[in-house]
Image (cartoon, rainbow, N blue to C red; front, side, top):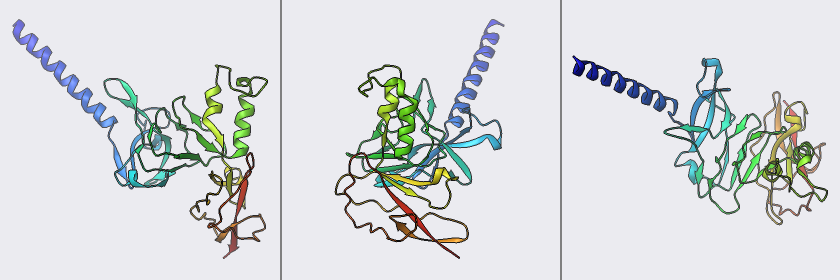
Length: 265
C-alpha cells in the first residue's frame, strides 16, 4: 500500500514538473519575423492577460539580421506593437535576452518602445557601433543597457536637467545615485524633422550621429497622408535639398537639422 502511495505521489510530482516545464517553454517561445526574433508578453507582465494586453518584446536577431550593417527596430510586427527591446529569460535562473551581431553598425529604436531591458546590447560587438533612439521622450532604460544611446539634443538636455542632482559643481558625474543615466545617453548631432506637426513625436522623425568627415546615412522616406515626400532640406521652407554624398563637418555641441519636404497630392 505504501509503495502504491509513493508511486502515486511520484507520478503526480513528475506530471507537475512536466506541466511547469511545458509552461516555461511556452512562455519563452521565440517567433521569427524578417531580421528579428521576438516573444509575446503583456504590457506590464510576462504573460498577456488577454489578446488586447499582448505586446512584443524583440529579443534577438535572425541569421540574416546578424549580417546587416544597419537595422530599424520595427514599431509593430503583424499588427502587434513592439514595446520592449530585450526581456527577462525565465529558465533555472533569471537572465536576459541579447541581440548578437559582429556586423551591425547602426541600430535605430522607434519612439514607442516602453523599456530597454538590461544587457540587450551587450553582444553587439562591431567597432564603432551606434545605438540611436528616435523618440522625443526619455525611454525606460535599465542600468546594464550599455553601450551609449544617442538621442536628440533637446531630449539630452531635458534628461541632463532632470538628473541634475547627479552632477557636481564642475559638471562631472561623481554622485553615486544616478550618474549612469547621464553616461548612458549622449546627444546626437543630426535630427531629421517631419516638418508638418510638432504633435507627432515633438516634430522629430529620426536621430543620427556622424563623425567628422562622414556622410549622413539617408533615412527611409517618411509618410504623410495626402502628400508626397520630396526629399530632405536644410530649412523648413524646403529650399535647398540636402546632398547625401556630402561629407559633413558638424561643430562639437551643435546639431544639424534636416527638414522633410512635402507636396500636396
